[in-house]
Structures are given as C-alpha cells and as structure tokens.
Length: 608
Image (cartoon, rainbow, N blue to C red):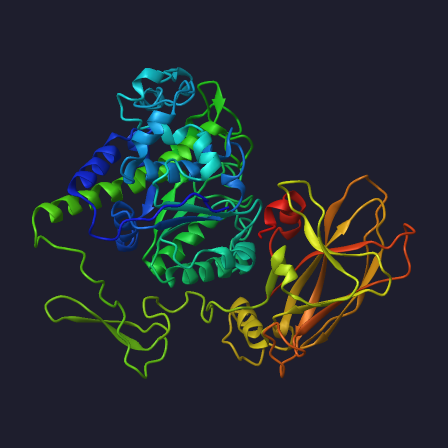
C-alpha cells in the first residue's frame, strides 16, 4: 500500500542552512535500542554508496521522494500495529529526521504515555550481558518516561504507533517522503518479480530488498530460478530513471541456518542460506549495500539459553516463531536499517552544510557515465572505464540500453516480459470476451475479492495472455546454463508454467472446462469448484503448462493472442453452476510457494 497524504516538495537548492543543521541535529539525537557495537557489525557490504547518498540528499533537500519495500511477510506480521513494523519505523524515522518541522508537529500531537517496552538511550543491559559472558537474564527494564520524550527531541517517536500515520501514511502533513510496501506473505523473488514489480513506482528513490528468509533456502546451488529472478529484480531496479539506492536487508533465522553462522545442512555442508548467494550478486553489481541481521545478532542468538535461540529478553521474545518477529524484534530490525541510513545522512548533511556555508567547496556534480562502450561493442567485449590523471581501465561492456550495469551474472539473464500475473483489475484487463460472466467483488468491506463469476452453463470467458516464445527460450537457457538459441533448448524451452486460480466452496459451485487457442496450446482439462469436505470458501490453484507457438509471438492483445478459454459446464456435483475465476499466472518456472501465497492472503493480492 502506498502512503496517501501528499504535499508539494521544495525543489533542489531551496533548502535553508538552518534546516540542514536541524536535520543533522535530529539525526545525531537518534538513540538505538541495540548496542552500537552490534549495529556497527551489521553492514556486511558497503559497495558504491553514491546511489544511496543521492537518495538521502534528495530527501534532505525536500524533494518528493519514494521509499519502497520488496519482500515477504517479515514486515507484515508480529507488530502490535501496522506502523510498528520495522519498515514503517524506518519510514517514520526518515520523516522525523529529514523533513523540517515534522518531529515538532508529531510531538505536539502526541499526548499518550510512552510504551514501557520501548527503551531509548539505553540498551537495557544487552551490552552488559554480552560483556559478562553472554547471560542475557541480567538485562534491565528501563522504560523511558513520557516527560523525557521532549527533552530528547522526540528521538523515539518512530517506534510507537501513531494514529495520524495509520490514517495518512505520514507522520506530518508536510512530509515529502512516501512509502510503498510491495511485501506479500510467503513471497520469494520469483513471485515479486512476476506479480509485484509492475506496481513499483518508476520514480522510486530507495528500494529495500527483504529476501533473506524468503528465497529457496534448501538449494545449495547458486544457480536457481529464484536467484535468477532476484538478479532480474536487481537489474530492473538499478536501471530505473532516478538511479535509486538499493539496500539488501538480509534477515536471519536460526532454524533456517540449523544453528550455524553459515547455515549447515545435515551433511555439514555450508552455504544453505540465501544471504550468501545474494552477497555474490551484490558484489557483482557493486552499487548496492547489504545490511545483515546475522552479522549483528548472531552473538545474541548464540548466547541465548533458549534452545530455539529465539532470544528471550526483558520478558519478551524477539521472534514470534522461527522466522517472524515480535514487536521487540521489529524495533531491533528497524535499528539495523536506521543505523545504516543515519550514518549516510550524517555524512551527507555535514557535506551539504559545508557546501552551503563555503561556496565553491564542491557542489552536486553531475554523475559521470561509468561505462563507455564504443558504438559497435558487444556485451562482454573490452571497454574502458575512465579514471583520474588520464588513465583508462579495461572492463566488460554493458548492454547499450543499460550502460550503468555490467552484463548479467547468469549469462543471458536479462529483464524480459515472460508471461503474466493477473489478479484483481489486472485480470479484468485480460478479458477479451466475457459472455454471461460478471466482474464482481464478493468480499467484505475493506477486503476486496474480485473475480469473473458466471452461473450460466455454456458461458465462455476468454483471457488474452501475453506469452513471448523467445523470452521463454532465453529463460530456460539461463536455467540450463546454456546460451540462448542453443539447440538443446527444445520445445520445453517455449513452455510456461501456468496456474489458474479459482474459487472453491462447499455450496452453489459448478464445473468448468479450460482450453487454449491462438498463440499457445495446452492440454484441455476440467475443474470442479465444489468441495463438501469443509465449510470453507477458499482460492484453489490448478497447475498446467502453456506452450508458446514459435512462429506466433503474443503481446496479449488481438485475435492472435494466447487465449485461455474457460467454459461453464452443464454437469455439476452440487446441482448448481457458479464458477469464479480469481486470477492467472504464467512464468518460465513454477513460482515458489504460490499456493501458500494465495491460500494465506488472497485479499492482500488484490490491487485496484
């Protein structure tokens, strides 16, 4: 969901020196809950920070900026209120620290007592416990008194729930920093790439990737469809118009790691964790940073006396299960991210203050083009990077359309439109014909459940699905480790893994047949939407294969598109004929955990 309250941001260069100094003071006032010696361990990879610094500078100048999250359920579960999730806390802190007058407005609005679990200016004894040999039972309970909030300039306002934020999506009326959450429970990189990237704003300034525990952790191999999707997400984000900062946030699960730092499997092989594979891709691209919960929190996990290493401190568990966080855990994860952003903000604000006070001390120079391939250079050829003192350095050429990126780490793994992920209005747009079908929302208020519904036998619904045969062949070539166009990629190389999502219920439901025409083919099948085992109405998923015809490319429009044809049948096991189509996906490889995603949060996937 994106924040709803808006205001007109100032243009670059209009920010006053007093505002810069005030922002710098607010950044320096922030006090983490975790010991700083642990937070300093959390940055596992710095890389080139210019993108991140530029995003912070735009925020400090009052430009309209957008922060986005891509990931799974970590930010969606465990907090007492939605705005106490770790990413909402990060957004609130950015507003309170960098938007002039925001903290003061929030303080005037806040009259409630400070929650006893939120501790500021003291680590509650965690640091002392570590120094005393790891016994966390000595952690002190030091609730920060309400009357001291103003004395500290409201440095902890981001951690507590705010009715104004829940209502408006901002901590203050004049905020210029928006937040968009594209997190979906149980979703990994493949689902986010296929189903959520289309909703990522093109003008995004900062993107946080949260896939540390939502990637295929059981795979010991670097090359895997989920990792291929992760790289394509990176390439897409790094190529966006405003050159956004990219922050890889690697959460950590003791259970996933089997109790070891690097994640041993039952045969004592390390490399189980997705984080270590993500780090290789981060090093390849260089322009993103990585913040690691493992690096910071492993000493606490290892010191905990709890057998599941869930860290029990101050009578509170940091995690609510073996992956998800408690409210305390959300504050700790927020500490990790805010600590890193605060360091960037401190450096950039200090530089901006000096530049404002001393003209000519170094303004915001235009970024030089990193890659300089000659006009006829091919990807992977020798190119030059220009350095100081007239020195040029050899490097690999990037694609002409993406001069700032190196070639894909997995050869041929370019960003391409492979298929479709259509739920809600995205499904409605695919309907090329819907005779005797209605577009209905059958959900309660605030929880939409849109879909095409018909109770008329013989009613035909035609869905026009974009399917690109050459892109599918390229994706399968990447998976097989061969070059696109290799003869070993046979008809299966044009195969898409498709899923039709429909409603199953214990009453009123009928049957439908599904066939394919146009630019694709499939094996015809029937679906029964009636089940009498439990009195539940739930989305059901049916897997099937689509084969793109090599000589007929489809953009999803016109009579030559790949047509999925759903027809209501006369036969029925319930005596009635209602059938509801909720969505359809088609991708080169099966989307990991798709049944879990739709089974858990159907309403959360309906975007209007």
